[in-house]
Length: 134
Length: 328
Image: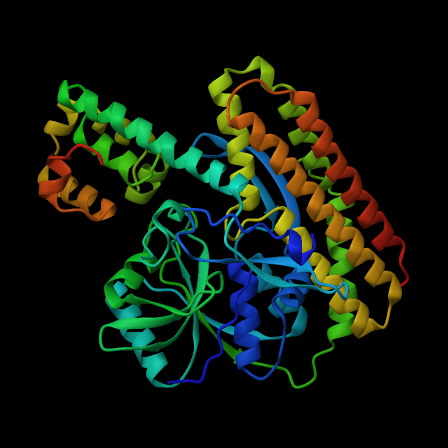
C-alpha cells in the first residue's frame, strides 16, 4: 500500500480519532501514516454493534412480557455474551443462563444482584429497571 | 513528571514496549519491536469461540511480543499484579511520583477515551501512564495519535476488568537493560523463528495451514444460514482490520521491520522481502474488501472470496520461502 492509497474515509466509528497504518512512501520506505478509517472496517464493526443492539431490543421486548430478566437487557447493552458475562462473574454459563429468565432473576439474593451491578458498572436501581434502548 | 515522548503506533503491545525501551535510552521503532518480538503469526482456532465465532488471530497471543522481545534482548521487566485495586492505584501513583513511566494491561471497554463504537470486551490492551493530574492519569495510548487521560477510578476499573485475559492490575517497568545489545543477531533469530512457525507448524490451525483451514470453512458457507455467513465474514474482517488486531496491517508493519533490518544487516535481499511482504498486506486488504461486499447483504460468490484469500495465502507463503532461502 502506498501512502496515497491509505484509506481516509472519515468513519464515524473512529469519531475523529486517527489510527496508524503502515504504508510505503515515495522512497520505498514503509512508514506510519495516520488514517481516518476505512469503510470496510466500519461496516464490519457496525455489523457487530448492530447485532448487540438487535439482541438488546429483543431482550427488552421479552422483559416487557415478563419473560426475560432485565439482566439480559443489560448484558447485551454492555456488549457482552453469555460466556463473557459468566467469566466476568466467575460463574458457570448455565448459572448465568438461568438468571436470564424473568422468574429466576426475581428470586436472586441482594448479594448476587449487587455483584451483577458491579460487573456491569451500573446501580442496582438501573439493573432492575432497564429503560428502553436509545 | 517524566519527559515522555508519545509515539503513534499501529499495535498496542509493540507500541508500548518500543516506547518504554526508547524512554530508557535504547531507541527502537515499533516495527523493530514487533519483528524481534515475533509478533507476526496466523491462527484459526474453531474450538475457541468469541461471541460464538471462531478465534482468528493474525498475530501471537497477548503478551507474546513483550515476552519474546525482552527474552531475546536480555532485558528484565519488573512485572506486578495485584488483588487489591486500591493498592494497585496507590503504587501506580507512587511510581509516577518517582518519575517512572509505567506500562499497563487494561480492558478496552472501560477506557473512557475510546470511541463508543470501538469499545468491546477485550482485556489485553496495553498503554503507558506517564504522569498524573489531581484526579486523573496522563496516558500515552499507542493506538491514539495524541496523549489522552482517564480518571483514577476509570483506569482502575479498566485494570481490574474480569474475564478472559483478565489483567489483574498488571503493570510493568524496565528493571534492567544490558549494556551491549546484539540487534543483528536478534533479528536473524526472529526471522528464522517466524518463517519456521508459519511454514512448518505442526499444529494444523497455525500458520499457512491455518489459513487453508479458514478458506475451507469459507467455501462451505453457502450451506449455512445467510445471517450466519454474513456475521462470520464480518467477524473475520473485524479481527483483521479493527484497531490493534490488523491482518493486512501487521503484514505491512512486518514489511517495515524487514526494510529496517535490511539497512542494519546491509542485506539487499531483505529489502526485496520487505516489498514482497507489503504486497501480502495489500492482498489481505483486498480479501477484506471482497468479503465486506458479501456481508453488506445481497448475493455473493463464495468462490470469488476464497480466490482472493488464496491469493493472499500464496503470496505470503512465497515470501516466507524466500526469507527462509536467504543467507543471513
